Amino acid sequence: MNLKELYQEIILDHGKNPRNLRRTENFNKDAKGHNPLCGDKVHIYLKLNENKKIEDISFEGQGCAISMASASIMTDLVKGKEEHEVKEIVSDFLDMIKEKDELSNNILHKDDKTKLMCLSGVKQYPMRVKCATLSWHTLTSAINNSQEEINNESN
Amino acid sequence: MNISEIKKEFPIFSNKVQNNDLVYLDSANSAQKPKAVIDRVYDFYTKEFSNVGRSVHYLAVAATNLYENTRSSVQKYINAKDKNEIVFTKGATEAINLVANTFGQKHLNEGDEVLITELEHHSNYVPWHFLRKSKKIKVEFAEVNNDGEVTLESIEKKITNKTKIIAITHLSNVTGAILPVKEIVSLAHSKGIPVLVDGCQGAPHLKLDMQDLDCDFYAISGHKMYGPTGIGILYAKKKWLEDLPPYQGGGGMIGEVKKNGISYGELPNKYEAGTMATAQVIAFNESIKFLERIGIENIEKHEKELLNYAIEVLRKNNSINIIGNPAKKGGVISFTVEGIHPHDIATILDEDGVAIRAGHHCCQILHEKLGLSASARASFGVYNTKDDIDLLNESLNKCKKIFNLK
Image 1: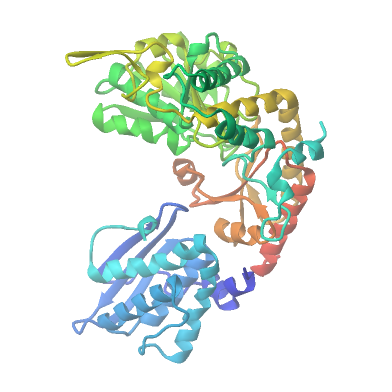
Image 2: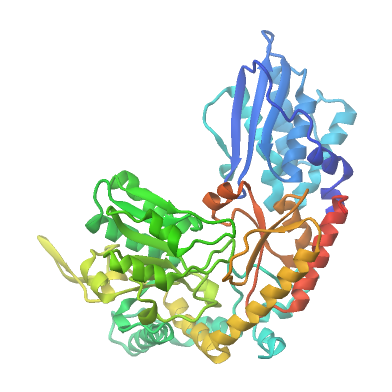
């Protein structure tokens, strides 16, 4: 157990001052996520252009430092990426949080990967993994535009 | 009352939790178990195990007697009029579901109202919610006031000529408010309305007297009373147990079974279908003995002292906001810390061995009313000391430090 690893400066910063915490104007895809265990909620808004590139991404919601930081960092990193790239980043992140030691995608820059790896401290806290993954599952749902609300219990 | 001696009866405190002494402040969730309870489960399985109420061999008869002894102990402990008013269930949740289901089946019709409160735990809301669909009933909520309590007046305000049953908590698991149950029962009865009391938090902390309280149903959770998990009690007035239909069908609850008809067993067998949590029921007798030996009045007094101390300490700590300020309050403190989410608090406290609960505590209606998505909660048991509260406070200061708060 290592609290310092979990609550790194970057997590505290993003948790306290989340980036992209707003609603995208003219969004064309969105999804809601909810963690029934703790009541955390997130709503992700996407604006994809005709080339399926993310022009803008934002979120609204409330939650702990981990979940807010995770959503904040995620939205920062996927902005400007193409849909298929985003899907790859999401699945890479979820694999890393679940089992892998490192991120393996070739889309993100090294610095961005380092930023994302700051969330890996959560692996030592199984009850908190859901806090980190909620926004990512919700992003997938927004991209697939499935109307069903993400219920993190089943993930 | 010597708390350090009492604490020694709980083996969990002699072990380290992640290299820390355990500061257990989550008894409203589930209480720790004294050695006598744990040993009783082991001994029963080791030396005395048999199913109850069926076979006639020696072990079966002895086990049946032990099982029924717990029923008698519970009857005495809660001062029920009749032993057969004690029904064992798998928990308080099942006890409430039993009443909602059977009372709903027989006595609720389209447009009828069930009155609950905004303080209720999900287990005293969801079972009634089911009846909205199956019986087209309405569920009404008596309002909680700014102090986090539900008053007799707020109950009275919501009673209509459609109100068919009132279901209320005895002691809120969030604000700690103790409801004026006796007055509510008396008011309800004057209008011919039965009352169910969710006693999950009441039973481990308050003196119970069913005949004095006069409620129709009282649901008890065994594991919150220093007992094993998997057992709960439904106290119900005999007239209701005789009036209502059976809940679950199966072995043990029948009178005679024929292809063209079935009659049901006598009380309390009618409501105890299938093999029950036998070892747990038998071990629960040790929990009752434990509570009787310490004395519930002494426990109440001790927890009140802890509560007052905790309120004093936490109020001095800037940025801690205690939820509710009920005039009558049990050993539960829910709070928020400005700038730190309750889950982050719980994780950081855990690192120091301080176990609290964070979340909505199965009370989303109340949290929504309070405009909160979650809160942190410290709740007390007989084994807690003022040192535990000091450690809680120190650990909360650590949270603030990690989050760079003053």
